[in-house]
Image 1 (cartoon, helix red, strand yellow):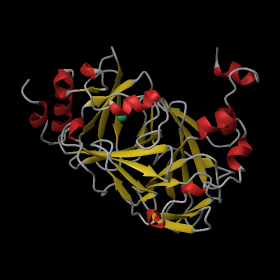
Image 2 (spheres, protein in one colour):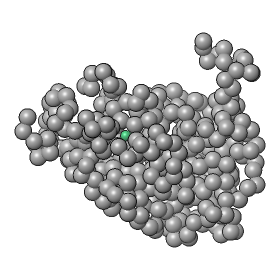
Image 3 (cartoon, protein in one colour):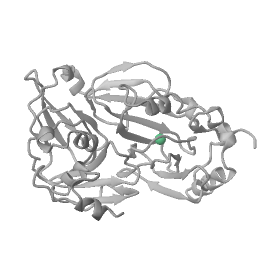
Length: 368
Ligand SMILES: [Fe+2]
């Protein structure tokens, strides 16, 4: 059965989210990965500016992404919506104003590498701060699941309900926040705005390997979740797997990721080369994925998804979280270095040798 057949039958498997976005007048790009910096965009009547929906192969059922551009010297239209939204700026400089149910209005300035959350149903507007350059951001939202649950567009975009409990502290809009200690790989930074992901101080997460660092972000008290990981020059992280939906970006360095399902060849199934601006998402299956830094600087990648460290979404997601750095041999979701396919290290060392970078993996993988 084709999707066209589903579209023709109004009584069977109605996908309210897909139906709605087809009315928006912007491209719907289906891809394994895209470059947000060069993605072709079209005028967006509802939002102003230009944009495109991005449906990655691994977007899952709960969330999706769109890329929007604010023209030089311009702004997008004011809006509010009954879905969560986390925004990562990929190019340009500007500002966003957000009005809270308390009547407080916050305006903060952002640039490439910024990350922020829009509190549920809070009126907001985005402005370009430059008269000469456009500004681009990628937004990951849970519109897909919410519109499919309520199947009413006005409920999402014309809903007066005010979430008074989500009017978080003023300082959270100035880039300040609160560290919520849990355990490595689950520590949280609670805020609404991270001005610069490229320099944000990160705690260690040695369990994921190669001296890596990580923090989980709770933004705008949202059920959408973000985290960021960093790993050093000449290193790669351990492979792991989880449900679809994690939209992975890059903010510093460059490299590649290998993706494969159980039984597939780790080094010859899917490879995504990434740099700042790239976005991709490991599909359901779930898909093992492993990230390799081939650049002469530390590499950092944020990921945005539905459900995460703060709020319970499903038993599967909770178990995945608890077991994300536990070996598959112990029922977890991580492949330890000593258990990985030997060709993974060989490929990595040949890739970085081409770029004149020394491998540091000897100190992590041990004797083989
Ligand atoms: Fe992952």
